[in-house]
Length: 253
Image 1 (spheres, rainbow, N blue to C red):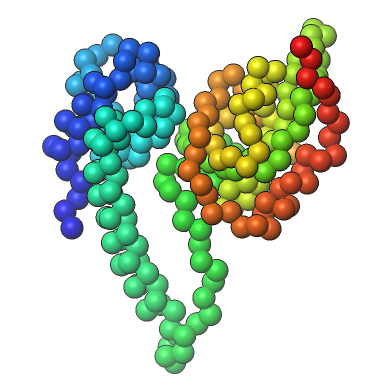
Image 2: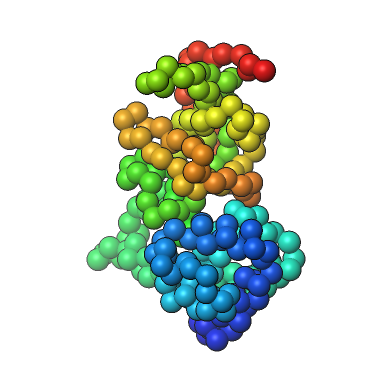
């Protein structure tokens, strides 16, 4: 199968960028924090497409643009119809590579006597543009990747005081993906309606505290609706208890 062609991807990427209005274009550049600021200056949009491909590489740039378009958001056909063929092609290539690796693994599952060795549990496949919650808790927040998860529990609004004795608001979420769950702190009274129980969200630009493991959503965090994840029921049940015992306060007008 032929690999993804940069000669086709660059014109498509340029067309996607040209569909963005000035505010959306600035948002796109802001989300691409892996790129040095000097490369995110006011170049022409065609030049910017070339810079994106050079920095991320062909395959990674496709996933990055998919992620950024979801965060802006630009999920309309004008943008998605340009992006979809490249995502489809990349998915096909990944499936083909996976088949090759599975075939190799199958051969290695037999010992020298020809007897099949016990298999380990099937590894959960997390897309390259995402970081799993399990990995987040082990390694911290890496590479500015997206954390995706389901809100299975939401606390009431709570308060704390700064060093200057200023009263501030926050609330907590229990969020889980296919691998693990994490307590999330969301800062700001104005963000109380941003997240609802039972809904799936993407999080980007979070802060991770290791001990205890808490993911913090601040004013710099970006979020958007996410697609449904296949989450084990036992994880959801375990996640629901992590914020039960914390005190709550009523929402003030």
